[in-house]
Image (cartoon, rainbow, N blue to C red):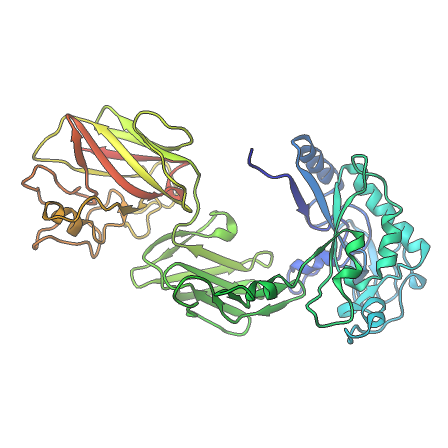
Length: 493
């Protein structure tokens, strides 16, 4: 059985509200209290989500920020309506006050464990977890989450707390399903400081920040693209078993970067969450799915490989799309008894069904149409009806009703000369006529009739092969992410 067995939530507690820059992601890592109202919802909504997840066997794990409270210099009202003043160490909804914090000093020496654990990380007011009172308040917060149904916790900035203090807090917690809560701790150890991950493994799992380093040691693999939570971003190069190297194109303007992976994919990111530029992507013309938003929006690449790249999100300041995209899994089938038929991605076989091996969004699609053969016309067109999808135009390059296809090699002899010539440059199943740059055969365009009785489709020249009396077969690879929940339309004449 496939599915999810667990999900991690963002910190569920009250935090600061930052307006400049507007609502950045990091505001949720500056606690105001342990009240369960954050930018993501209320306590009632959290309880309902946890209940629903547990009911279907999905455990919920909460991100914990217990090393510190809000940053120095901040005052105002948190997401639950609580007033706070960091400079006065006033967090009365907990309550925490000046005696509950370490002395104000900057973390500036990672060779000194005391500096790392007892000073203020990037100006955040550092709690003194050696105090029993502080431990009790934190444990009370965690036990409240356990009562709601939370199964475990990710501990943010665990490296900046002494492992003995964390152990004392964990020792105060209630059981979960008859055992201890599941813990995994953020300990950034890249062999460059005094604090080691091994100090924390007795407390639970530890997130491994040396993964990229270890992966680089593998033959023919080098990855120097790593993002660490506190804004450390390294752009170098990525080499895998693909023969060509990462091709940087587009832009690199301080807080904006974009590059392509040859003609296979494109990536863009803006540190501030804003980008609005026309860039060369290096990809074939077509409409692509933004993988970051789960295909909620799409990017159109023109015939010159250029696309309008727009990012408008501080939460997900990233855009990525690849040739292939994403789609449902399973097999593809279509069958009909008239000149018009529909096809759907199907998880089961049957008459007229071709089993395939999934590969991204693309699936082998075999369409079998029963219709009396007319030697003078063997024409088909297709895609999506304009009434069924938003974003459809009369241009194949921009219409959301045109479905990308790839031809399967059915033969290389002279018998297939017209097919192989006319299929070049025919990249979509659509209703809009011959595509720009589409191939010709001895000067003949695809809409001319073949003497053999087989004609390339008038609108787009997908080849239909007669496989039996009154039967026609179309065999292509199709980008199923462009269908309507797996459905598409084909018309044959």
